[in-house]
Image 1 (cartoon, rainbow, N blue to C red):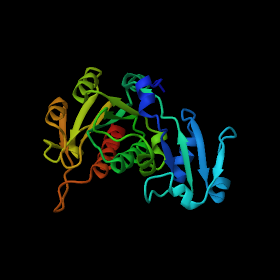
Image 2 (image 1 turned 90 degrees about the vertical axis):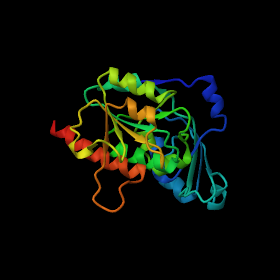
Image 3 (image 1 turned 180 degrees about the horizontal axis):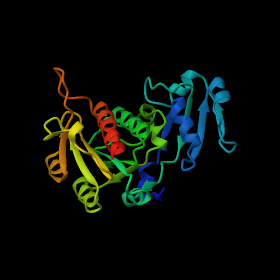
Image 4 (image 1 turned 45 degrees about the vertical axis):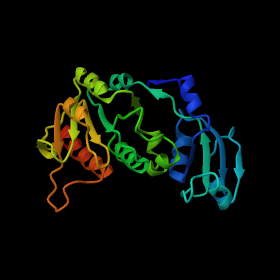
Length: 252
């Protein structure tokens, strides 16, 4: 899939190996050939249910023990695993795989791991090619995000870029139609006439698109909402925009 090995600096960053929990997130990780599982803890019931690889030692634990392995009140559902972080992915590799069908979701400093996880789940449902995030001001792809993604972290590649405006300019050079989503957009998403390759850019919670990000987009579109509230949570906006875009792409 065009992954590249983690740098030494990145190995240091993950000196404490990521832990994933919850049956959907763990099952997807176990099924992902690119994911290395190092350790596992599970209740007897979960251990009988999950299909752990033979080379992974499973420690039986009670609910209280598992609770100490995850953040406070995290819904572990009886299973926790320790994993290697996935290798990085080049953005060019994603576009080279199927440039005529590529659909990207670009997150402009969306920091809430629950929102990013929900966005990943929608991205998997709509066969998004990758999610692009910034090196800074974005959550790590660890347990809270993975649980919110309900397994989608293993299905949708996440590409990290150091400079978002530069990355968007590079996408435009490769004929990607870059559309920012903002409540003050000039055109309704329903009238956008989306084409592939397509990148939909979503702004941070509360702040929206940064000025340079907005200026770099080919077009800025809005979701035309009939009710009193004119904006949606970023994860809900992503799902709705993907649905509308998918219908437009299918019509083409």
